[in-house]
Amino acid sequence: MDIYRTIVTSAVFIVLIILLDLYSWQALKVVIENPNYLRIAKRIHFGASIFIVITLLCLMFIPQLAPYKNFKTYFYAIVVGIYMSKLLIVFFLLIDDFIRLVRWVFQKLFYSQSISEIDGGQDLGRITFLSQLGLILGGGLFAMLTKGMIKGVYDYQVHRTQLKLKNLPEAFKGLKILQISDIHSGSWQNEHKVQKGIDLIKAQNADVIFFTGDLVNNAAEEVVPWMDLLSEIKAPMGVYSILGNHDYGDYVAWPSPEEKAANLEALKAAHKKMGWNLMLNEHTFLTRGDSKIGLIGIENWGRGARWPKYGKLTEAKAGMENVPVKILLSHDPSHWEAQVITDHKDIDLMLAGHTHGMQFGVEWGSFRWSPSRWAYKQWADLYTNQEQHLYVNRGFGFLGYPGRVGILPEITVIELV
Image (cartoon, rainbow, N blue to C red; front, side, top):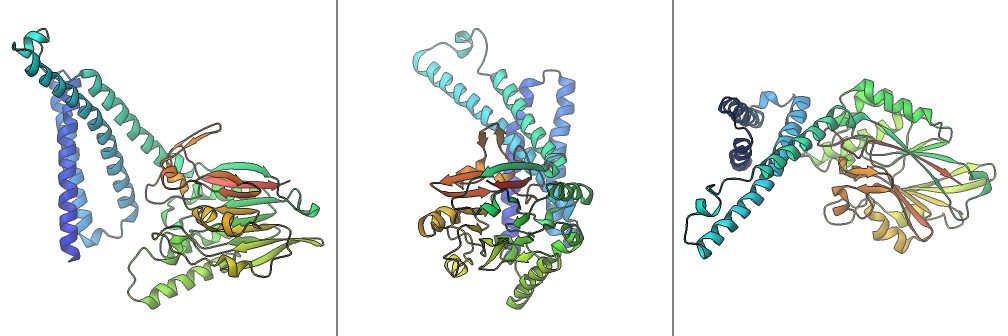
């Protein structure tokens, strides 16, 4: 059954590629007037398509190519970038076709003479400007996606904010919290550039560090090559971590339930070996002198059937009634509106990640936009509801698309004032 599903999926995908190539070629035919250049462009356009189709078939049906994960990741990303760009070109061609259809209908209904007479001797050819605009914007999109893979993916940014928490003990004023999230170590490929990110974390001299989930993509073995590097992340008051939805191995098929459980235990052991305090539906206290604040770390809890709900906030919080300030580590920001601000109003600050800002968007001063907002009301930066706060980290790593455009990898520094 799986092989038939793969064949059908491959056939549909290839047909879509061919249709997009044939249709987007219309724009090049309009823009390139020189016959010699047009022949060259045709060979490049359809030659690249043939290469892509053959390579896709090889990757799908030749098992010996399975270990070449890096090549596959970048190849798929480039293919998606190419055809997203062609979809943009097709959008303008469809506008052109609609205009041509309206002109044709108008001529048939209201004029008896030929269209060439109406249009001054010209036929219903394509509007050159629309083809040019489609090619320019499509090419620009592909250039942005390519730059995101070359530069944006490891372009770590430090986001700083000061936060006033009600009832914060005097001893904790000025406490510097550093948050990272969504490392996705299984996607990393450049140790030198990751080291720069780790060095930037260390340079912040934070008092305490919180990691809010997704250490791996699926398997605990992904983090093994990076453990020495990640072990360099330290803070005087400790490093505290939680699990994200990808850490449970729910998105791959395991040979047996026992192997899946063993994978999760291996991941928990990795946290410990790196010196991180993994919190599994539990709480602890951060102390300064005679004062203390509460820290709660829960397992993944996401709104909707799609996301696992392993978090048990009520149980994790039990016994903290007299703590003046409570900070919650919870991977999925949807948890904030679903439970925290409705049923747990004594939680002052929640730190989350998960969205990555979809690794694509625009940030310009206070203006911030990403397709991520269509899925998450809170998807990046600081949100406040009365006296409760949520900070959503944009993610330190990446998943799927091996790049970032506009929404860059983040190191969060929060100073309590």
